[in-house]
Amino acid sequence: MREWNQGVRKRREEKLRTIRGETRKAVSPHQSWGTPVWKKESQTDELPWNRPDSWTEEKKKHKWASRLLIQSFVAFALLSGVYLVYQSDAPTSQAAQGWIAEVMQRDFNFAGVALWYEENLGGSASILPAFQGKSDSKGDPGGVKDWVVPAAGTVHRPFREGERGMVIRTAEEAPVVAAAEGWVIQAEVVEGLGKTVVVRHADGQETWYGWLKEIRVEEKDWVKPRQLLGEVGSQGEEALLFFAMKRGDGFVNPADVIPFDS
View (spheres, helix red, strand yellow):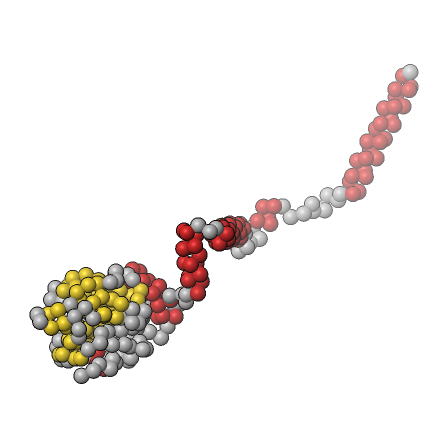
């Protein structure tokens, strides 16, 4: 029994020696297990949060994906709403159908957006067509095309140097229309001019319409050429309209760009 135990111990020691010998052969004491992590980290001068294409890029991708998801949801909601409106025969739905059809056919108002941007945020939004090639205050007075006469009548008092505008004799309550497309920046009572409408045009010029009996537009309205602004009032025994054109900080002669009847 004793000899048997010694034989078992001997065989176990031989197996242990064999295993240790194979391990030493497989892994040389001079063999490297690979570059340590801390050495890999020191191979670059950039810190992890400064390296390009790192976690910041992942956040950008995630933000872009979230924005795309929201836009897709909003587009789907709008499309569903339009579909439901056109499936209904209710009076309100029919009115909404007409409004949607009118909006889809209308040209986008770049000039109006540009003037709103300039008025509220300052500067000019050069990316918008209305401000591309915009003339300055000393530029061509014909910067706005297709000027029209604001009211049918004759020139009662022409523009004079040092004055602000001209006076047009017309019929009482005659319609007063916008001389060109633009943005209503003022529609109120002005000292010396009574009820007055001021329209700013895409090239920066302004047209003033004074002595009105009634005002038919509101401030921040966008008006087209020949769109009704109000009616002519009376000054004493005559129906007169004050009309002026402002460029930059000064007033200029409207007759230089608008063909008035003498």
